[in-house]
Image (cartoon, rainbow over all chains, first blue to last red; front, side, top):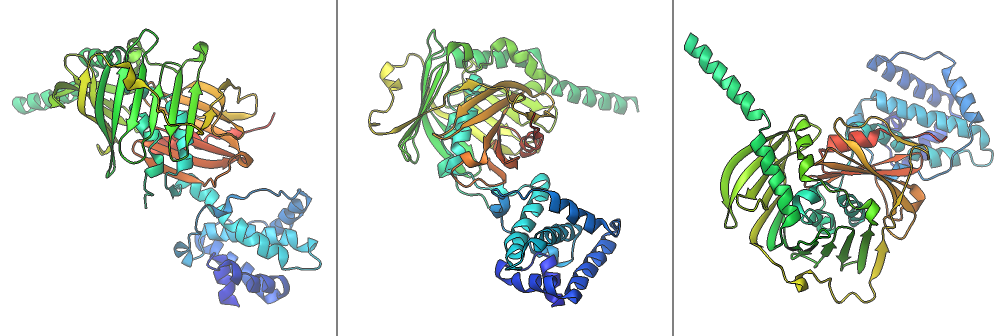
Length: 183
Length: 318
């Protein structure tokens, strides 16, 4: 189980593999202790300042008071980055912590099916948080799609290049559809 | 010793002089803008970007009301664009769509006047390059080298007699070509009207109107706080992109490069949007999510600039 918890922390598990370790965290005190210890190790390795001991409880309490937002999550925007996470990085640790907090906040509300909330929430929350960081630093490279063309055409109307080159720069705006995806 | 110092000084002065905007180069740039506005011509040009090339036919008939221009893409599906001073029509055969962007006289498309060219020297060093023959025309090269990393550089080649632009190259700070337009054939002079007719077989095509209206995004709670140096807001509108909900558009420009910021509710965008950056030639498109809205930034500027503008978009409801 320890290996699985470690893999969960590092974001190395596929969606169908999440049930088992999450269930263990829910029921098994030792598993939960392992989870916390791994985070402590990770924080120590990364030289991160430790939070006050009751931080978790205060965050959970605050979360419980917040309304649950239901809306489209940009979670499916890219494949999770896995290879980099062999060593629990600060980012992975914080992501996992968010996942945990999310799970803990949801757990008390679950009476009939305690696994429902964690399985539904954890895998979606984790990549979304990671990408929030990734998008700021090195954004994901996307192919130009036909849908992008609308924006290119709308933009081109205001480009000062038109005064320099006439209608010629429009070739870019209507070109998007046949543009191959760049690797 | 003195000779070495003298040579060194000469080199420094030469280097410094080379990087300075010269009045001759500015005159040349004005000449290009004037030619684009005044000339009638037909020709064929090649657009190059990465390892892709696309050939197009272009025709322009100058006129008192700004003239009429037509672009026909000759490779792949026959896309066509007709442009006048206050209307742009894009004919897209794959989707059987005509996209129409129409302006009233009061909100005509912004045009750079030859008199405004001088202000480009704030952000670019404008100098003259070599002379060279292109498509049968003797051309003068004009270089616009950016003073910072926020914009691309340009090299323009124009007919020494008429000022007509025959080749335009966009390059990044390492001198790599981002994209290039080159005429392979050009005829300057009167153009028969039938060369500027819209395509005929468009029965049953969908017509999408841009329906542009003024907008006040600050009032709606949106802000683009830290703008790029030299880029100022030139347009703030509400428009349709497809037949869905209106999209807000703000355009920032330094007089040569432009960056558009589009904001739309997530629910309004039908196709899958993704967070990230896409590039084609000198155009970068950065998509991110802010407060349940998609923010799409499109610009003829380096990816970092486009991203920087995109990352300052904020929503604070009033």
